Length: 514
Image 1 (cartoon, rainbow, N blue to C red):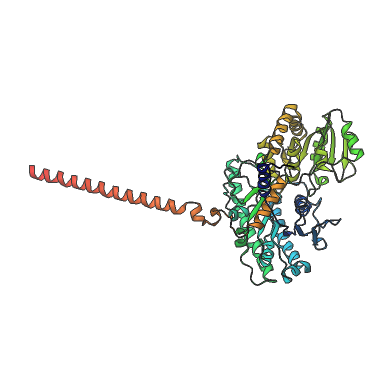
Image 2: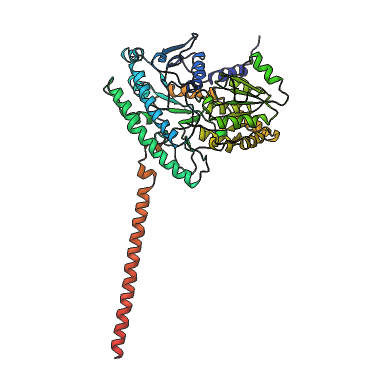
């Protein structure tokens, strides 16, 4: 059989262009006990294992069933998993409580991580890893472990940037237009909100440096005597895979080594349980889904706010599915399906689900934009205020604050997102969100493989190394001010000389006339 030589050459050429990656030995470091956080990372770690990489995962959430290439080092017996533990309330005091929570859990996670015998054995045995993947949240302790193992690091997030991440990655933080994770205002804050952001940004950065990072450095020193400053190690990370997407959170001034990969946790929807499916499909006017996440406890909502919610829902023809830890709701409304656990992604994927009333965690928000479901966002704590602002600014939904929640206000917000025209705009937004050259999962996998393959290169932006006085252009301003003062001084001297000379000439002429 005759073979076309040009076709054969063409096929060989195409085959040689594929990016070849050998099987990597990857260590995942995820000591934080937040279930909602690990829910993001788990599909990614499993996908790396499916693609042939050997993945060892340190976490509080070991797999129930074994998986090829996936190995657990469990910390589950050392911590209490965080689920349905935080009350629904919001104030400056709760923000202060968040700072205490972040620092205390971060330092305790570091202690649990380093105290684990299996973790220490990795260092003792001089285990060889091509890459360390670690969550960037409340502790940099994992960076010390990666240093001892001599492996490059890629950071992962399940949220927007924390306050202490901006400087290390050289990301500009300007309170005039950059949202602050824990506060309202989005990209258009008021003067009050800008002052508020400036104060809280300084507070969180200072608290993290002295009561988080410094404590972790001392904890590491108990086990290893040669760990460089953690902030120095943090600045040498290869990449940060940021769990956002600009269509939701807006355009950002991100350097090349901070890459948006928001959406990779969203799985193909599974069939709903029969009772739940029947409740949805028999709804003549569609369904409203309500959930305040896995960490907030819905039953702690103030009774007057619950009554306002149920009263507003009773005015609408839609059925309601509500994640609720109790057995009943006040008033026992008939059109409400209650459950302590719900398959959120599968519910949001159903075409009869018309609105999502949410605390605005980033996972649920991402699932909402993925499936094109309009949101009523009621932020409570953590990153929820900045997520809620992004929801409103992107057009995915509207906001309502807990302190303004009333029957009339909630009805207004629900009717807004239930409007068919609003729904159509959200569907268009969802289409744009999906329209990307490479999937979020493929992008996250690619950059991890890239970091391991090219670990000798530094991808840090120069902005991360610029001293503060240069970053703020204080040296330039000083030079310009000095030059201006010199100019004023010279001008003043010249004018003085001119007036003195003129005055002398006038006196001379006057004396001659006399």
